Length: 552
Image 1 (cartoon, rainbow, N blue to C red):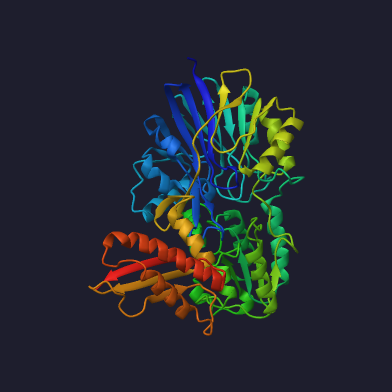
Image 2 (image 1 turned 30 degrees about the horizontal axis):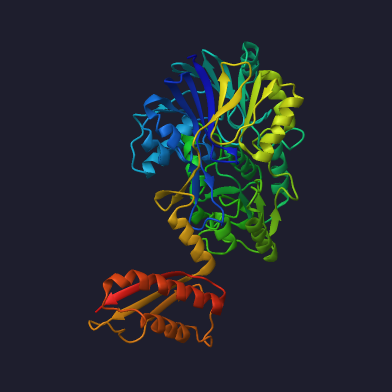
């Protein structure tokens, strides 16, 4: 048996978010594995009560004795958000650069886990030996501090895993993209490049943070009243831009929202944002004139509990907004968030507040590579094989077509669970399938997509709830009337629903011998069916129904 080099995505291939990728090397009975990134995606309204979704790690948990570690490319939630949920099943070392390490440590503190013995901080552009893998961190540019590509050197050849990136000629904060090293890596030969596909449909270049800074400064110089800017907290370059623009326009700055404070403190701890003005507490900012303050807050996607939504609803304790003020949405609208975000925009405009967004001004650039950026990366790296990841199926299929245009010999299309044999063989190919799926964080518990709790909650959200309690006397008779409780049924006072349902329940119950406890289960099942049928006939809804038989 020959030694094999394998790649397998468990998340992030077929969706944007939830990135988790595996690499393996060795003979089939003696492979060593590494994990690159371990992220989440955020649930939408179709899954009530669920906030986070992450990849099912079962496939690699079964191989944890041969797992050499988790290597993290950068600190976005779609790349690190699941680590505190999955790591306890693996208990391996974690490797990350300083800024990412600070945010990782906080996640484990919230879980009351001391991760320090396992968290290995790697300097920028450093290397890591995890035999048979030699991993080099390559500084790239993205919409967060310290984004890294990974050169993974193996006995079978070299892989470049790009992580998230763009070509930003002036990122403002953090290092420039290490194009010199990328060209050297390309000259040494790259067997396969695992590459970001997010913006493959976007022509041209993705743009620079410096250009955004110039535009936002021009905008803020003309604004006369209170200014509120909302953006992704993780974009420290954008954060520094707002600090810069506040200072240049003679304004104080105040940070609003937990994640904004968290990222600011992490950046300062790692030596960034040292030459900016000091932010002031939002409670003190209330005493500053409207034309002398700018707030930088969370909630750029219209999140119900985000600072921006609370400010617009006038429920924020410290930040007040009024006619003549301006809100700048310095962020992209993530697909799926359009409805709640436009609702928020409309609400603000109706109150006489100016709304500035990427729809009407230049206030945002993406952190992902457009087609011209991709062309540059391809020209530097010259990979024999390209495997698109970090995209929906439409993105990855378009990226396959793009790779063919770029004369890549072996573009390979994958989805979550596909195992790609990169070596040996004349051409890389999908040759096996690993079990893959999603886990939903339901409160503090991880549940599967078809779990009973999610099914019941979906049913509740659509059909409502009905509970029937029947008191049974020692003689086997019903004591008084059934006790009914219901929520979410479309009823009015004149519907007669309660009286009619009581009669149906009493009629059915009389056909059973209540002295016979063996018949209880049959009675409960029958009552459930009768209640649902009655409810459907009267309201059009089939509520989640619970029957209680209580002997007194």
